[in-house]
Amino acid sequence: GEGITILGLESSCDDTAAAVVRLAGESRAILSSVVEGQAALHAAFGGVVPEIAARAHAERIDVCVERALEGAGTRLSEIDAIAVTAGPGLIGGVLAGVMCAKGIAAATGLPIIGINHLAGHALTPRLTDGLAFPYLMLLVSGGHCQFILVEGPEDFTRLGGTIDDAPGEAFDKTAKLLGLPQPGGPSVEAEASRGDAARFAFPRPLLDRPGCDLSFSGLKTALLRARDGVVAQREGLTARDRADLCAGFQAAVVEVLAVKSARALDACLDRSPGMSAFAVAGGVAANQAVRVALERVAAERGVRFLAPPLALCTDNAAMIAWAGIERFRLGHRDGLDLSARPRWPL
Ligand code: KG4
Ligand code: ZN
Image (cartoon, rainbow, N blue to C red):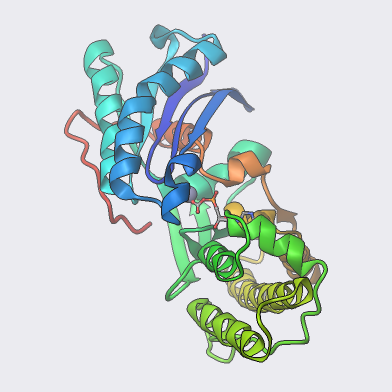
């Protein structure tokens, strides 16, 4: 019938995912969204191992596609196009998704639409809330940290971003240095809620520099120094030490994100006073302290704050299918010569 139904594939990092999303008139529906995380495969290595990730994607992507179609109750003949993450990301993983999409396309004659993974995140608030352009997006995860002014389905302006680590990475390293479980974000947040943020001095990197760039690698160094300072006086860390270190670290991350968000939002409001919202995506957006701080920044400026449900904030294929719908509507189609782009700025 009328409408657009797209199968989306995502395999650029450590989640293998497939989803079916449908747009009919004004109504947007995620018919299915399958995500297979690889965390267990990489846990022993303390980070994502590209070769292991690539092999797991290649082994699982077909299964995810089958499950997504089955879950949606959709036959391939009812699909209008296949949207696939073509980058940026780990080349082996991106290739696994692109090859799978090409296989289906070759067998069915369906068009392929290559999607930039970051565009998938940036357009998610339109899938979840029908948000109008323009809006500001802060993408804040284990791999990314950037401010993106979104003015159209293919109109992205990067206002600034991290010059070194992503905040999620900093949370993960902090957990590792303190012997807390991975992923670090939730465990550091739990510790921080019991701690005294004022006990240890953490820097606020780049805060005095104009613009929206951020830096987080200095926080890790500061944490290491503070931890070793405590350990030098006593045998090891007490529960109190751990909580205070986490609280100090998290307070620094939150303040840096809030100050830079305020600056990015002001720049956007100068440019388009009719800005519809300040939206966040990425795993770090799960952090309550981060959310509260960003929400306040938006409220102070009379701007709506929007955080999509967590399952759609982190890596998934529904956002890729949705970005595919947006491109499909504009008449874009890629061919069987679509290539994987490990580096692909928005
Ligand atoms: O978006 P995501 O699932 O994957 C990518 O990085 O692409 O984000 C995962 C990151 C991890 O670094 C994790 O530690 C962090 O998000 N994270 C958090 C919290 N929950 C997850 N960071 C801070 N506070 C949290 N509650
Ligand atoms: Zn992502």
